[in-house]
Length: 423
Ligand SMILES: CC(C)(COP(=O)(O)OP(=O)(O)OC[C@H]1O[C@@H](n2cnc3c(N)ncnc32)[C@H](O)[C@@H]1OP(=O)(O)O)[C@@H](O)C(=O)NCCC(=O)NCCS
Image (cartoon, rainbow, N blue to C red; front, side, top):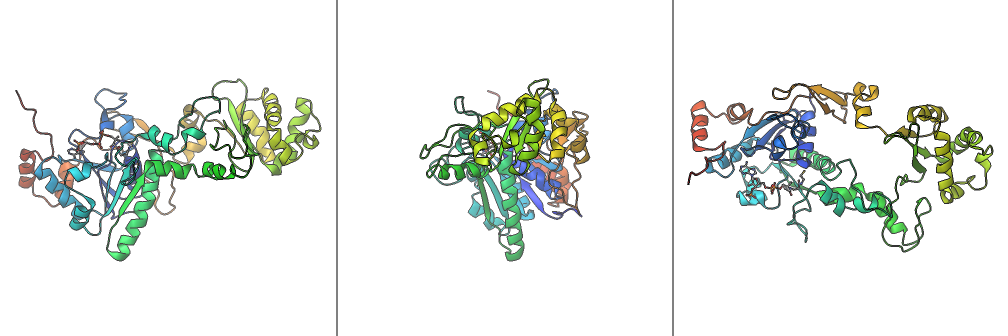
């Protein structure tokens, strides 16, 4: 049985942050009703690769959901919303500040309608504080949560990371909050408001940088490859430094293309074996005992030498060949995998992390799979819904509306935009 079977979610989320969360919950078995504006989630039409077909931006974030379109600017649409609210366990949204209030549905109103409802809300900066009125997208959150100022190299501009920590990361945080609140609601009969601000989520993911921020008031950061000194203030960008207690860096390999790199962690426990393996080939046969790198404190101080020697050794090998040399020595390492590498990787396929699906508008396509593996209820991934695909089904099955009522609501414009006024 699916872990969240019987849990029904009224999902008003759009773009990426909210849909990431509701897709995960749908993969765990929740009945996710994607409650869409009559023109649909904007991502349906964004970055399209096939004319008139739902974009991959949409399909990859909205699997296993049902779609209903409702015009919340019509009184009839609002009534459908209220009826659905009464039948759901969770309501979730990631509108810009104040949108739901402007519809007339404050949190107080919502819990008056359904006291057991758990409401999940993502905002760029939360509902309180000087930034609370601002909208946010991924890179705004990365900029304001500490990720950008600590990513890149000191002499270059700050960089965003490819991982969507502001959007998808916040969606993950929300999922945790919703499941906790759902458990409490089951015990107490009372729901609650679960809020995750994207900025807060990014700060949470930058936790170790705030560790270093505080260490800087007492000392320099010996493990950083870039200069640091006591009381320097800002944690500097440190390229590909490991950021942890063990030294690490990306090593360029043959044939030295954009992704021909192996990330190598020079774990203390493996130093001697690693040095004995590479030293003779790079002209330093006694590397393990060389006073410049023999102890961890010397290695930290002279880590550029470690990376130079490893890079010299790597000149003769591809990233996979170097990995094959280092794995038997128990050296933690991993090739920089391109998207093409991952889409064809045997390990990835074996773990159902690159999954082929079919779609009525676009044919065959691929999605990244479910990363959380539940032994008793593995995810079965189904395609995303087309716009309003399940409107009638939801009205009949969830709300028990009769066909004539549905027809009347349709005529009244509950599920569509009003026709444009002709001047
Ligand atoms: C992402 C974001 C910047 C997009 O901004 P936007 O396109 O202006 O969208 P908003 O959420 O502010 O507004 C949605 C509009 O659609 C309307 N709308 C939404 N659902 C509707 C429905 N079912 N029926 C009628 N209208 C609807 C709303 O009324 C609102 O219009 P209004 O401003 O006239 O009230 C904004 O939603 C936001 O800051 N969200 C919170 C942070 C977040 O999640 N960001 C990451 C997204 S990946």
